[in-house]
Length: 129
Image 1 (cartoon, rainbow, N blue to C red):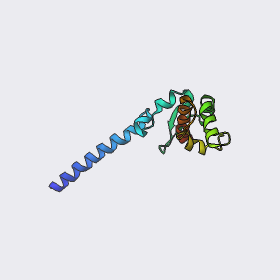
Image 2: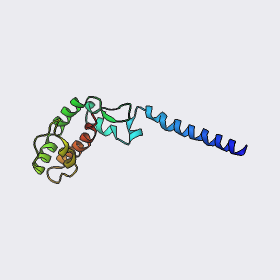
Image 3: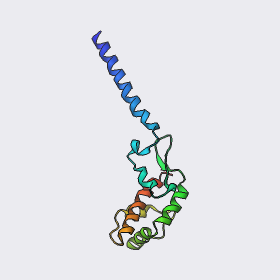
Image 4: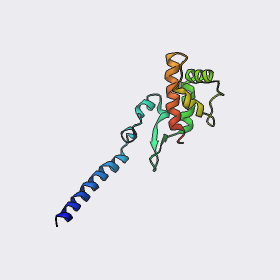
């Protein structure tokens, strides 16, 4: 009888924990669930609004608009990455090197470095489109 009560208690506790964890998935603040700082992205503009699909993958609500806005806002950082690493111009089909090298930028102004870091962060999510 004790074993049955103990098993029942464990099952109830497990159910409660699972409910709490999965209930968070419906939270509108994606950062609370994923650790992604959505305020950081949204501070760059409304085009960087994040959404989560059914499988939990985070992407931009409108990836094409977000990409265009990133290019518009981060021109100095993109130019510095391109110059420092001798890359072709960034495009929606060819951006992987920018994602990798943006974090590693050593030259340019502080603003270029800030933009380059944003480019890497942005492209890390953009690839989920």
